[in-house]
Image 1 (spheres, rainbow, N blue to C red):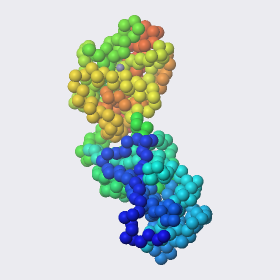
Image 2 (image 1 turned 135 degrees about the vertical axis):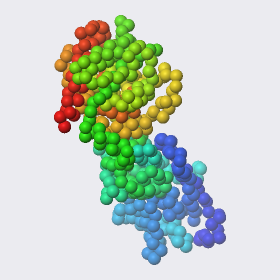
Image 3 (image 1 turned 90 degrees about the vertical axis):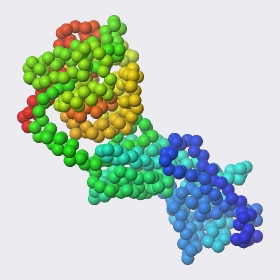
Length: 493
Ligand SMILES: [Zn+2]
């Protein structure tokens, strides 16, 4: 039986339902419509599949050569080819016999459904099912692990967010800028829906998105409107996201200011930030010692040493037992025009044996430890009346603020190193090293800044020591020596 064109309405149109159960929610700003219609036609009790529609439904690149009457599609790195009136299916130049030849309905190529699918399952992808009961296709798109691209424009650059269903390691992600015009991002092992990704709305410095599925990787080309500085990959706390920031060259105004600072970096004012205070005691030791008292003790001793011995002005975010919101601390530092920002804290851990000192500089959270410390130190936010200040202080803000201050990242890390070396000389406890984390208190201070955790108030031995003048003085002296060397290293230049 041959079905004429007029009988098309009699064809069975089947909805290809995609099972998205294993996928993370995709972005909502684009229309990701996976409902496709594929015609199944029954001829002499054999079901035939409309091959082009099938190829389009699974977003395989389909091309039909009307002259040679063959249809080619590319799917998951495989080249799949069928010719008119032939029973041989070619996959990567290998021939598979479908036993029944393809049928042509004008330019529509129909292939025998069962034998086609059985070869397709075996050689290409086995997550496409023809549901006999529901008479429809069910396709699991779990093979897609890159599900969307979102571009966000910010004051100082553009952020690219690539949504994924799995975590890609840093070494699987590569990117480079070609002739200042295109940013290429490759993700090894990446699988994407190129049609959908290509429709990603663009903004900021990005004028176009061109995704290409390669056999073992994905390449996404971002066409750039203007020059960007070296793109940076950010360690996202969301494992299903790859974030790359594209910083546009700093506006003249700011860059001049930075230049000025760098050329003759005068340390006119050091801002000391005693952690916690007032209604926020910080961590409390087993014997009642409060972090807020220790931090203020250290900050004051350190400030006095700097003023007396270096003659440099010192400003405090608090000099008494008063509550100061986190956001206000960096703001104070900026208003004063500080050249260095040091935030003093005490560590605490569930494990009472944990001991030692560590120094942080701002970067998006890296190690689990660093994330925990950041969470604990940030917990104070819940005590603050005006939480609105932090509404936007999510991951993105941390990225942006580190973008803003990446000019000071090297310096901050240097200072953190000096602190660790000096503390190690005087404190007879574990040197836990320099770490990176995203502390709100460090966010927004546009100057080199570090946060030092001078010891564990949760550790009985360390709590006891923190109560002594000798210990507070040793800590202050160590930090003083760190600051002194840091300033000295810039003065000789
Ligand atoms: Zn603290």
